[in-house]
Length: 391
Image 1: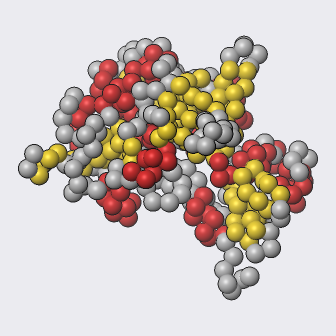
Image 2: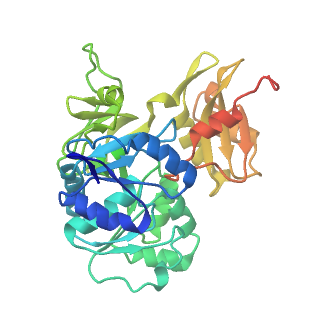
Image 3: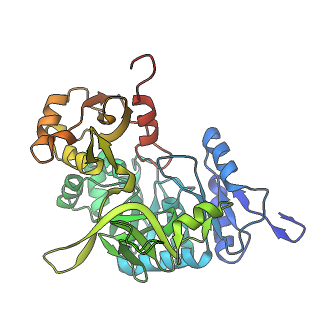
């Protein structure tokens, strides 16, 4: 619907999204995918500003799925979506059919729909647990699946699912940092895993197995506005970059510099034995906290915790919690009630400075997650922060 001659976003939910997205990619009215949960939908409507004119080059406005703060409306053009879709198929070896066990309103699920429409291939919906995959009669030709690490962890526990995954041409794993041990297990079992790095602002994954897709320019250390270099922060340039945040010129100005997207992640280039330089994501810029006067890299602590032999397949997240004594207290959170703080501290201190070892280990039945299935670190920090009563 339009107000006069002004185009408004078309809010779409569920099964209506594939057709609406196809129309938007072909020059039709821009689409705003809505999440199914009422509380999340209400937050989405605020960020999407549905009663305001659509951005000039918008094909889709998708919500960011970061783990902190209110969601932002990320404006993606048809050209950006097309560039991302085409570059993916080139990297994977050709056009293929896509299996979809991810929420469609997030960028990973949305890009599956976009790739299929732009290439004329099929989308096969799956439940989040992939349970029906072993019994499906899949289309002939190349077949791809996109999922998050949590889904891969659960799938590897089921031999029939492992066999089905191993029959595919590529299994894209992204949306969160992937445990190297998990990848090794999957690959030994024959699952053709491809790690992806990207975000809503880059039309989803734009770096595959550490190597940028064709046309994507990734840099580490971006010149800042006063002539210095912005540390080891990752920036992304090229045709996949978003147009801006809907209704937030202030945030857009901070995130887009000369057409490049300045991410919140730290990185480094690591050259392998094959001579190929690959991007290693070290963690978020705000993962470095000051605890007791020392700088602590929470990502490094979490990576060390993930390598702990006693962990097994348990989840562990490491967060910085405001604390009156330490400034920031390093806290590990797990879903395994049998793990011990003493054991974890000893393991971490064998490789990292003693001051980096977690001072608390909190066991929960389940770690809270965002709509994009990432660990909800903002919620963890809020729930673990000391209150006036327990200070």
